[in-house]
Image 1 (cartoon, rainbow, N blue to C red):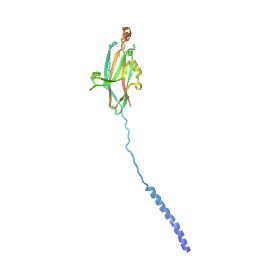
Image 2: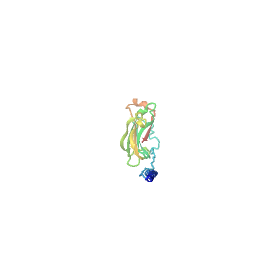
Image 3: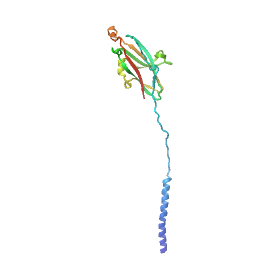
Image 4: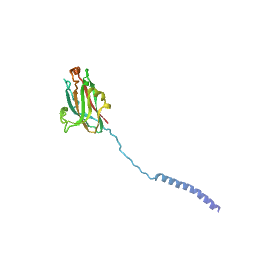
Length: 202
């Protein structure tokens, strides 16, 4: 009987290491046999677009009127185009303005109208066949236009220009008369100048 009890005690304690080994195996298997799943979205990249503007006057002056007198007038057309691959907002504003020493710019009125031609635009800024659309700049003096639209922030027209798009304008000028030589004579022998600048931003 004593031998049997002793053997049972030995067997009991001998089973403990075996149980620990089995337990360790179970934990080990639990650590490496869990389910797993992944998904990804590779190859993300970013490329910026670009803006570009040109006009069919090739950077030359539309107007170079000389020896004008009250009542004289003229017109020219210009198409502004973009090769940009993004849409933008196109505006027109004045640059490099000089109204002259005798304020001739106060008497030169301009009107800018957007529109289109049925086919290709005529050469040399001619407006033959031009169809008027909307008024971009209502009739105003060069001085007033320069003051009201001196930068992109205050620019006129604000046209939504699509990528690769264009916009055609007709610019009319008139030497406004006051109706009498006494009022018009002070403007003799003067020179006014202005730049028409189109800028697009997106």
